[in-house]
Image (cartoon, rainbow over the protein chains, first blue to last red):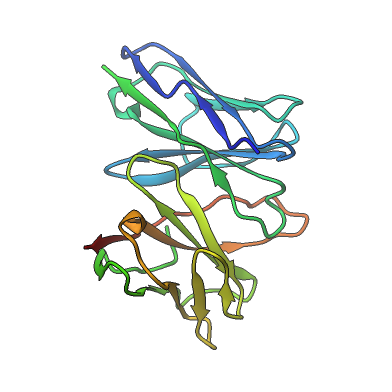
Length: 114
Length: 114
């Protein structure tokens, strides 16, 4: 079956702009989580959605937001982009994070802010 | 912060077993040990997880000490394609709760050499 699909794969934006990234989870997976990966900070949790509700949130400023649709697809938005937002953004899906399942990650969206 | 300690890097000869240690001395009774790996520029890949018993799947074996304060991931016959960063993560499973995120540390950079 198809894996986790993230679009676009690469993105270049200018400081001050906003960006929306998309994630389509594995069919049947209702949980979607987002992570940011940078060389300096490593992999950091952004937020988790389950059945269209944000269930958990990491320590990121309010410029980072997300949502989940009824078909479990998720988007994350970053407003007023800063140079430090340049990173690999990863999406992961799971059937249900409240149970003992592993996450399946997508290949990520590489965002470059110039 | 990550609750695990791993060596920064390790080398392994192709065809030999790779044994990757992880220390999680403050692990709680309801925390599982998960292993993921990340091949360069790809999303992390789930390998295996366990609570207190040793586990084996088609990718690897997980050995957890009796006191659960440490574990070892074993790749029985390492290949060049196993070169990656390996992350050991402890994760609480809440039944009915909301915590589902993974807290990644720095991981171990495993280099498999011909």
